[in-house]
Image (cartoon, rainbow over the protein chains, first blue to last red):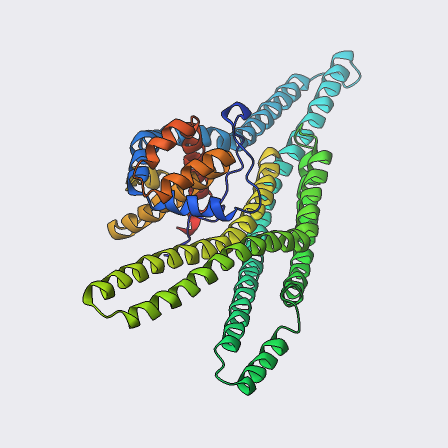
Length: 366
Length: 96
């Protein structure tokens, strides 16, 4: 059995009432928000409080939720059944009219009136069959479009992974540069100091922003490949929409335009938006990284004090201080990791938004 | 830990053994909680966030009381996140 995580769509797209004070999530979380979120998430009492008071009562209503969902899904089936019923009724009517015509003089007025009625009903029957066929072909096309959407999702997941990798590479590069900088201070002779300085300068010749841009460009190139696939699917959707438009009263023209615009905006933004989100994250990272470095320096100081401590009491005191500092450093590391996860989550949110709109567009065809 | 009933999963066409159900529900619980907290954090203003950070630094265990006092629409948030998570599960039920 194939296992897929729930987290395919990480953010909800349902509206929340403005009165409820809902603020549209921004692309990036600040370091403070990240820290607070990590803390709240790991706090057992908070989790228990939320679960007992809100989650459990909500989950007790999953039956009602399912019924509501089923009603929406049943609409398409009901519509198809209604068309079947109307087709059968029109066929019966034509049969009855034909029966009435039997034995009549072809030149009589009654015969001509019945003939005209049969003609009108035949046109109606053709129309019903045409609409019924469109509805079914639209349902079949939905499956095809869904398949293609899944293929985007794979491609987008790949790009998201690449973005994450970029963030990690940049972080690694920053850490390496910091290490080289510290090595200069630890040099034991002027010659060694000059040598280490040269290594550091060679490494930092290219600013970190340029280093990052180069990596981002590579990701954007891959995003272009995705753009081609999205266009193909948009064409397919347009075809499905055109076929179904004769059948439903939905303004298909605007629906198609809407879907197309959503694709285009998403694809066009893929490079720049991802880049901006990434830059914002890295700015936050810069602050956190600064704090982390300070803690690291403090750690070195504490270690020195521990070595120099002469009594067991002193040693224990410095060891406690070291342990505390370790905890702080771990927390900062978690904040940094969480920031990278945020990039990934935001990409997923964008993807989910476009995908949900697509699904809504397809559903409304029925 | 909260979780989905076997009956709900059966109704959406998902069948799993007990061990898988337990792992799935743990994942569901974590995912849901993560989404709720993210929404809460995005809902509060800077001053409230500051208060929260202060609580954290004081190593207070009263975070849930702060939530109760500062996030009056917590029920709506949880309800919406539960709905959204259920929708995700139903949408992906073919792959479960």
